[in-house]
Length: 437
Image (cartoon, rainbow, N blue to C red; front, side, top):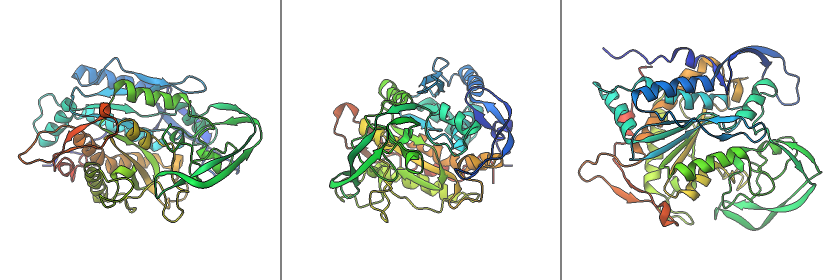
């Protein structure tokens, strides 16, 4: 008889706030500029739930009770909670959510994945699934950061359901400056094309945290990643005007430098049902200039997409794609994003950013913070097998005879990461649905 479905109970019935719980009247989701109505929603406390999970995991010997935060928010110094899980040394994995305030479901996916591993861990495993989880938690180290942007998230709950950025207030001088655009054919700043950015001096609220990491192309200005601080569509992706100094970015950067190197990272986003990755993992010929494909990165990504495509509740309909859009060269490129930064600082760290439910176009009202609570658990089940596969593939694994071994390309010998790749590192998670159909 098959095992009954895993039931997280109330944990998957409500969204989280960073540090308190309750039922509150909040704005409804409406297009920007239109008056919002009011609705009542119940929220759980992420701080309280992580404390409980940390205590239970510590009792089981699989969670470090001493790691609670990675830093604080830029404006109000709000704690950024974290959970360090696993006792292994054969691969270190970073799993994050909530870098964009309105993407509430990403907080839940990160938290529920940690909850799933703790609740399904057995010190004396007796089934193949229990043995797999036991193996992961004793051969990997996994960091969970469910809500990178707690202050922006709070603002998106109580003030503006479409809010994307953090809540840092910047007193900026008048801007009249040209910035280079992005050249997707070289993955560099365009040698001649420039964009003029102008706005008056004043107070400007918020920075897009996933555009403000100091990558080598951060300076490039695109429609999806801009130096324009004025409110409106462009400012949703405002990256700042000087090298990034947002506290939330600094917190993640410090985690990588102080506790890395990480072998893999998973950064949940919403929405669209697309699996994003950096240019080194790409679906292109291995000899294509200017960036050769990393075969192991590509292999793991293809496996994750295979696992996504097996799900029937929300089948990922979009193929692998770059951050840059071929139909609009360079303009859809996210310059200054976390995945690119992480690879540049840790060459060989294969990172993925699933754009999770709903798929695009979304049902009316389901975009971003509008995704109903009834979809939290189905969305988690869709993402469970790919996430476990990434954890499994992320590092040294028991080697069958003839298993392939690769060395990742790197320009910094101190960050060289040598991996052994088991060909079935993701295939073992086919049909892994926590008992759900």
